[in-house]
Length: 268
Ligand SMILES: [Zn+2]
Image (cartoon, rainbow, N blue to C red; front, side):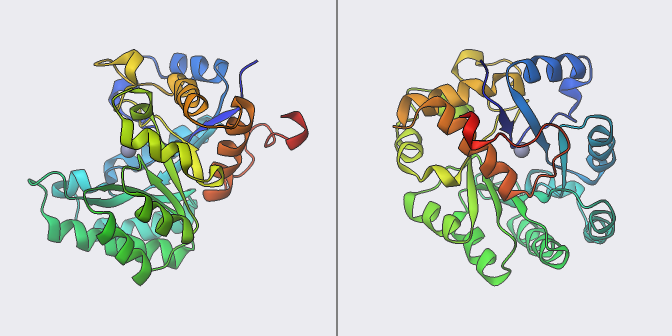
């Protein structure tokens, strides 16, 4: 039997899925994926994500401006975000954050847009979905300045100490395809010892494919492979990891029960 799991981060709105989105959803559901959190990246993505979540009961929208696409963003879009998110109540403001790995993206602009969006999340009492590369300390500092309702640090790649600080602020940490690579020794060691109540599963599809799908389009249907990797490196059994990561995602993003009920502890 497949475990009920949630893909806490997949970009199902992207053109990579335009040809076969229904098929991808069907395969993923058949593999046990019971929920799909689709974060926004640019203002242009928001309506498509909201439409998808209207059409599919297991798709949960997040709205935000991704640091990658800074050159496409502006301050008036943050105001639009505030209005739209206030009206539509997405599950989170995201994905937002800081990417200091890419030297070509203006850091000042990233910082400004991130701060403004944290304030939107605060104002609307919504959690956040964070994208952070080479900037965990800066992100943590801003989270202390603008405390939000928790959320998820997606594709977590920081240190144990940084993980501790996110967890102390009520955040979950997202792990995906990178865990399936033997060479990800540092990441696997971290995911092996973090408390289970702070872990969530994700694919980041269509990006970040796992070892079985290198150089291919990633897909939420491969989410069970992330569960396989966690089962391999952790002490708990598969059902326990699946159950806990699912309720963690529901808790972190207050996922409304749009589909099946959250699995009962007795069923595990
Ligand atoms: Zn993403």
